[in-house]
Image (cartoon, rainbow, N blue to C red; front, side, top):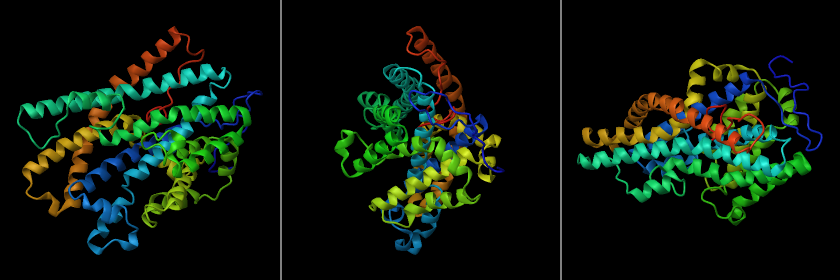
Length: 405
């Protein structure tokens, strides 16, 4: 069928656990990476647009568009494509999708060995870039204090320890989403265990559990920020099902347009406290990612362009390091520009563009000299300790092909 990915018999054969994950070509995984790259850019712009007038958060970002006053309407329109929360939602759904593929490729292993290997891979994929970023942030804070620069934040060593271990995002606010990725690991493994027992029904049970946890955070141990987001990982795992791939291939060619509009605009037309709006947007995100994964149309072609692939490859380091660049740019603007809060959106866009340009080379270096070597070292250690029998799979965070932030 033109415009779709033919999945045929390209599934992992395993009669014991009933593997049903769709196998997609590498070119499709590249499109998913591209999507993650633009999501990381959206987070950067969102932080900047809101920084110089934080009242925009309550009176513009969190309000339905029909209740936003004329003075804030231009900011509201900008925050539809540049919504940091929507971008993070895409990260979580993508993580569930990609990590389901990683678990599927370990299906022949006993569950306890697969769980141990999977957990180790998450650790070596997530922590090195986090630790590097926090060390850089702390050193810049120390140097700023020595130089008498008061507009750059100051941190204590205990805060460095807390944030570098992802115990608490006390230095680097956006690292809460990486903390969620770590906290989600046992629940992802539990969902995989249910899938091995009951197939797709097990994933539906996990999804139901995640939805109930929105109202009852105790179901996720009251882990920080996990209760509203856990079910998004399970949506991603369901999107990886062969049956979803087959259905997506038969959808109308314009489905991705509708899904994208609903995903971006949905939370801007409903009250923030409305759980139905939250759930509907997340499912629209699942449909969008299914279209990117299983269809070969205009959106997928755009996401496979060289610029998109570059952004996708460095997006995890970009997401982390952009915060350091943001604080650097903000420190300069607050010293050199009188009352930037009088034109918050303008100066927000100026700082966004500047911080992006500063972050791109730093993220490239981090991906090349931190992320990749640590993945390789983790693979070598796992082989030495016999934690896994198959080659190390680099699914996880943004770059190969994508997973979390």
